[in-house]
Image 1: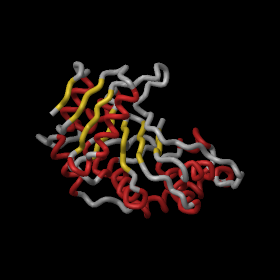
Image 2: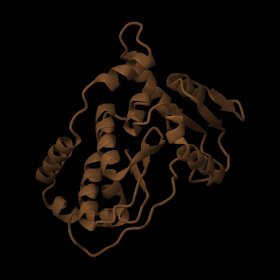
Image 3: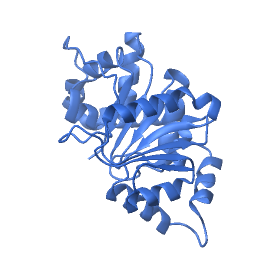
Length: 251
């Protein structure tokens, strides 16, 4: 079922068709608070409904990524069959992936590794609102799909809407593995997906040592959040002790 308050764009229709699950549609310019409120309501009912709600921004680039995936389908394969193939495969071990990735980074970065892991005493900000669906110029929402992905395993969202596999953005299998690990440890749930941004809703990590460990994992997952963002692991870790939203982006 799809609830239409306006006629969806071609991009939105393609993604809704790809998903094949209940979706609400919001045209660009809708109230940010309305969409946040509807997402929060859907999130509150997810246990009863047996789904994971996620907001999706259906732009040209995201649709192009799905088209590229479709071009790799075997003869007659459908998005649903592709999805089931991802879900039936064995996921990589997230902890091993983090260890290997961070080891390679430390070896390659040299002095820069010392710079980003330096203890400077700086603190990070609190992030507690989802924002990747907002147009920064107009301060109103992009075109948005609120999808109710029919799984109670939030990491499986990345099989329903594959994200990544280009440049430094991890592929869908790694996304699922990392998402499963973070859900188990921190209750993290994918909440907003664009073609190059991803936001999780999660619990603040009050223990500072655990927050540093998580900050290192997040840096392995997405270097831009430090390199083009908070500048050090320490500041990211401090932010994680008080934040309920984790934001990632890839150029």
